[in-house]
Image 1 (cartoon, rainbow, N blue to C red):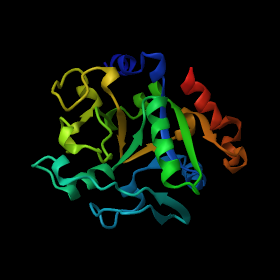
Image 2: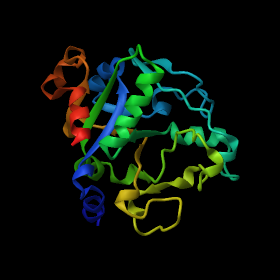
Image 3: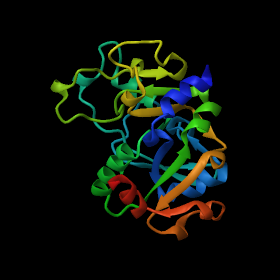
Image 4: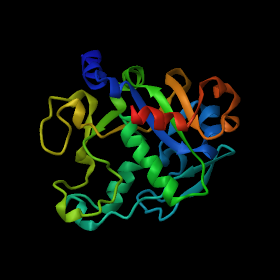
Length: 231
């Protein structure tokens, strides 16, 4: 059952990998703990409070920068959910893009927003990462943390209900969750992703020297992503 669900999700050539967007400054901590931790894991204080800007926190003597929360209009939040509840839910997950195209959009957005920051993209084997974290995986039809430019034109409301547990794929059918692989816009894993080196295919950065020594053999230039995207 598990294998069949994951095979359906990763069948397309463009969905064989999962992409995690982060800052170059976070790579030493990720490599040291061999894990990707949720924002709540890294900084449990003030759960649900909005971060208006990126926040640097100390985690077991390692510095990690957590992204800001975008300002989401109240009209985009489901009536049964508060802004605080939704932010708290987001912060308990690690996020991945299921396609390079969507990850590249995030890279482009952050590069414009923070031109002096250096970013990295981690590429993982989608099938085995999902298999090993099966019970913690959720699927989203939408970019959950986004702030839509035209909220009145959106056909959905944001709430924890938009996150579909992996074992509910093609079983739970409604208009706010993905019902086929091509509708999956975002993949979340609750709490943390462990043993990341086991699934890591590549680390894309603008300067390979900034990558921790243990991952140097998987270093690739960010420019390679542009080439892949154009194919």
